[in-house]
Length: 354
Image 1 (cartoon, rainbow, N blue to C red):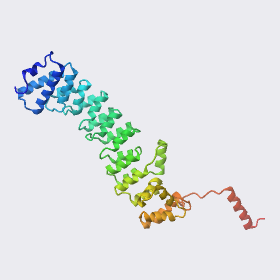
Image 2 (image 1 turned 135 degrees about the vertical axis):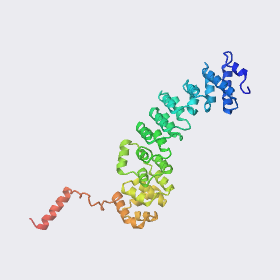
Image 3 (image 1 turned 120 degrees about the vertical axis):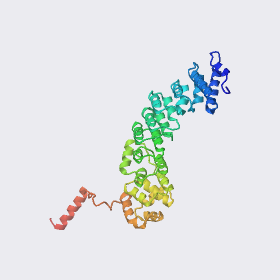
């Protein structure tokens, strides 16, 4: 036999050292990989590998597993035997062997062994079933690893499971946000829990509808209240979102006006400052100018539609300055005792009651 010699067979005797048997495992794996063996030699090589898989020395079995991890020509039962061995023997097979089927791997996932779950999460490809099992049974580290695996196929219910299990976990939220082609309803759920930095990432890496873009970048007064109630220490980074939108050419007048309409002052202010090229404090001063001339100059410099100025100036007046332009549904100002006395005195004089 050209590749396997009598000396190779003799190495199986108990007198040989574990190191020599480990070398034999690597040699046999190379012979099998190169496919240079005759049918008889192949059968003998497999028989020797199966014998080495039962070796009492862990080093030998580990060497065999490492050498055979990508070989698809060995019997499945040999691959499965190595995959179910002690940890250092099993990991190469769990991560790389294509001979292991989903059912085999799911059984191993549900043993609860984190190291084995982690190895499976690193496989080049993961079916939706495997991905779901990992996200269902794995801890934070395993789920985060699965999210980072671009070869992992996710279905909507798996994304929902991850959000439900790790509702307040920033690392998991980041892993979700960085997945390719997230379903729109998952992005909608993420918006309420991720940072503005991750929102900016979504804007540049996901295809979002105009409605979803508004949902991602703008924050109404009600949204701000909910955010602060959820986390009083949270801070908004509207500038980052403005820059992200501008980079994509989507910092439109409509979006800027919408920000003002829903009370998103930070976005409106940073958007105006960015369009004009001034710092944020200067923009705020011009916006709040009591005479409205400052905002008129800012609006003109920002090159926003002239036809919309009156309506936008009205909103700015309501939001920032006086309340002389109150909505028609606003309740009339309640009179103070002093105004009532003044009014009474005036009426007395007018009607000459005394």
